[in-house]
Every structure is written in structure tokens, then in C-alpha cells.
Image 1 (cartoon, rainbow, N blue to C red):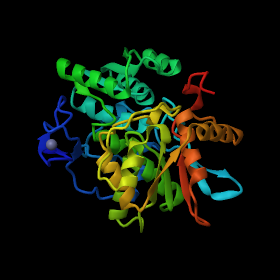
Image 2 (image 1 turned 60 degrees about the vertical axis):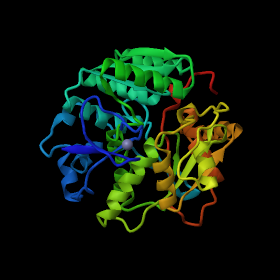
Image 3 (image 1 turned 45 degrees about the horizontal axis):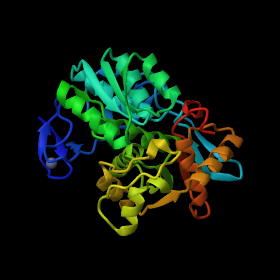
Image 4 (image 1 turned 135 degrees about the vertical axis):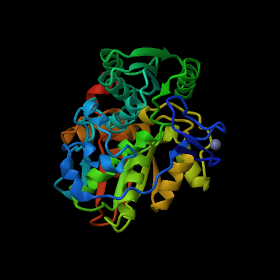
Length: 371
Ligand SMILES: [Zn+2]
């Protein structure tokens, strides 16, 4: 059965442990019908993101996830401030490895285990690496994580603790990805990429399902930080599935946030382009979304436009100030996550507009010199 389809040329391929990109260079999507959502089945599962396993492309009798899960998902949705009762934060740093990346890593590593792989390689600015390393350990799968040599020491310690081998590279985020991809080809192993492997998005889509359950419907607007688009695309796919099943009446608007110092998608959106041109990263505190050439830019731009959303760019001083303001409300987040709140503060909202802001990563994962 052919289950990958290239987003550029349409070529279809079977899912194997080693194929990760189309021969033309394009990214793969999954070939699948919209899942039929049976809301009544959800209570047959533990109160984790695996409540929605029947909407994921696994065999109906597959129980692999039961040996992989660490209870990820079902994170709290909290009113941010009593004075703004329609603005919620989704506290996605309350996850096993303290970031939202566990949504995708749990599902992707379940697929890797199902495929019988013995080793995975991933590259990351930090959080995806810690999540993949943790779930690889859980699956008894060997794991190499490619990271920048200036990655937060806390994240490096976390990856090491899970027994993964760290490959530190001196270079840009793109050079680190290239090094990982070369190793994947040379060693002929599974590329556990949160960018390229579409199973990752089957995990991040549960962000939408949870919000739907918590609000008993869809919000008006999602504020979402975007680098490679792992949360943005997952949320988009999740709400699209809910819409196509008639469970919600309209798509929430996606307001995508980038740091002005690394904003290839903002540029493309403003220019009316279908995909992003490579951008020179001028350096930003928001290391988690500092992606100069996002591989799924075409899909990200389509998703934002399809929901009548928009892009907002954030200056460095606004990031610092937003992080302080969130801390004063009780939420201690990673520097990158503060970009989301900064985006919310800049967004011109309508009266009574129901808005969700994700708190993606825990503040304790940042280096101490980062404020
Ligand atoms: Zn192709």
C-alpha cells in the first residue's frame, strides 16, 4: 500500500523505515481519507492524547502505543486573566519532556516501533530532540540527536539522560539538518524528523481535538508560533478533520507569529507568495522558531490563508517583555513561547473573540543567561 504522497510532484510511495523525502526533494503527506470521528469511542481510552488514536493512521488493532505512551496530552486550558475571560492559554509545557513536541514524538516513535526500526536520527533546536530522545528510550531504539553547539545546556543534559548520542554541530539550523540527513542516508536509518515525517503532525493535531473537547466547540482564533510549522499544521489538520465531520461549523482563524529577525513566512505572506524564500537569520532569542528556510512553507501559507488568518512579527524587546508579563501571571515559559503572548498583545482582537494561546515549552528548559 502506498501511503506517502509528495506535496510537490504528487508521486506516491510506500512507507518504509528509510524513505523520508521524495526523489524530487518534496515533503511527504499521508495518503488517507478524512477519519470518521466517533466521539463516543474516546472514553474507551486513557485520558491522554491517545483518546484520539482511532483518528490516526494506525491499524485498528494496533496496540503499540500502549507501550510507548507516558501520559502525554490533555493539557490544561486556562483563562489567562479574569479581565479577559475569552482568552485562554493551553499549557502544553505540562508534558513528559516539558514541551508540546511530545505530542508528535509519541506518535512518530510509535510508528517507528511499529516499523521495527532499531535506530533513529533527528535534528532539533532542542525540544524536539529531547522529546524524540525520551520516546526512543521508551521504545528501546537507539537515537542520535543533532544539535547546535549553542543549544541550552538544560536540553543537552535532558537528551543525554535518555541515553541518546549527541552530535553537536557548529553551524546554522539548516546546516545541522543537512548533517543529520547525510547521516540518515549513510547509515540507512529512520529519520525521526518533526519536519519531514507526516506522522509527527498526526500527534500535534491532537492539540485541536483537545481544545474542541475543552471548549465544547472551536475557538474563533488560534495564536500559533511558527518556525517549521509543527504545531500550526497539526492544529490546522485537526480542526479540518473536526469540520469535515460536522463537529464544528467553521475553522478557527490562524494568527501565525514569527520573530522579526527570522521571518521568512511573514515575508512570503506579505508578498503574496505561495512558498517562502530562504531568509538570513539575524539572530533571535526565539531559538525554537528560528527557521530560515521552512521545508513546509507552502503548506503553512496555505493553512493561514485558508482560515483567513494573518502573520504578525515580533521584535526582540517585545519577546523579553512578554515573558516577564507571563511570569507575573504565574506562567514561567521558555523564551520562544513568550513570542506567542507577544503576538497576542499585538493582535487587534474583536470584542468577545475566543482566542487560544499555546504555552509550548517550560521556562526551566532555557539557559539561565536567557533572562
Ligand atoms: Zn516529489
